[in-house]
Image (cartoon, helix red, strand yellow):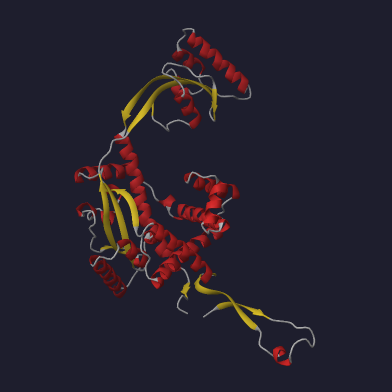
Length: 433
């Protein structure tokens, strides 16, 4: 067993200690123990103990029974190893999190709990959490996200054809609008696994199913046995459209009833076991669209901000006195695309324009023209012509389909990337020493 040790040597004044104590061996004080070596880095027991305490608290809050101590320790240690490998990539690649970014992230977390940052810190410390430690965990989570974005996400693309095929398949299945809440257990196999390794993993998957069939809690078994990214959340994958499911699940999930557990599903990553927790149905997506037109004037070396505002105020007065907005837009607007249409922007969905422009439109009754306002594009006046409720379900479904395809690809790519990262690293687990 490798340990960090501190030699505590007691130095006595001359003649102040007996000869026997002067000849005694120095005291050894144990500081920490290495539980894993990860390339040129180590994970020590105190890190594992801290993460175990956090995971047990999470499991308790979610009502998930904790696995046996040994199984949970191995599961948490494996997660720490994967995190450490990714943080090593961040360090080697020069990926950093600035203090201002970290503070903003902490403020968002506090706001999501309807607290100020000071109140959030007080609540954490009252519940026994070290705020400085929590702060570093948030930093690590941001780093892990950026490493995955750089290493995996940018390689995942979604084409128009994929979206069309995705929606056509959903329509044929008649379940594209259905949503499934799933839980998942993965019994992983190494990359280029031997027949013996595959057979061993299959036997483990079958033994897991036997445990589930005898009534053991799925979340607890997942936390104990799964190699999936959501293992410590009881395997919960959350709500997903049928078309959002990983490809290997699409033929299995629609045939499950809530509470059903699948047989082992083979993939390059290993053997998957899924449970359908809940099922819910279709919904429509209706948005309020705004039909608007505008005039844009961009300040430059000749036209100052004050000049742009003055010209727009004059145009507004001329329209209010009866001149044609479209003609004035054609003659004056620096937005050449809309100017050719008399400043007409067509029907706009929420989010189609920048926030400052959307706020200006949102404050106007139909038919009214705004005062000049600034965006990053220059100075504008805008007129709201009319509003309507629009069923945007088809466009929303296409957007959701793109998100779901991307998420499906990303889930599979991340799992494969992490497996490869683990297989190629030098990892020496010393938990049993």
